[in-house]
Length: 63
Image 1 (spheres, rainbow, N blue to C red):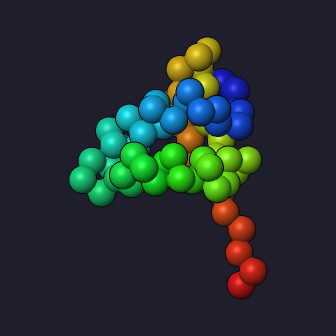
Image 2: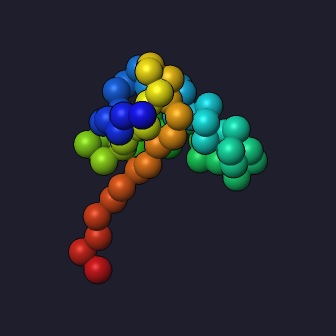
């Protein structure tokens, strides 16, 4: 398994995983794209080969 920065082409798989795991409580698809656009370097994916097996979104805070 590799942990990598997400690529634009990973976003559909990230959303599919989010929706599968959290169902009606999942973030909407547009949020995943906005997160990538705003904090792309902090959106990481775990990959088994080319398949996205997991992800994490990190943010920083001044608090």
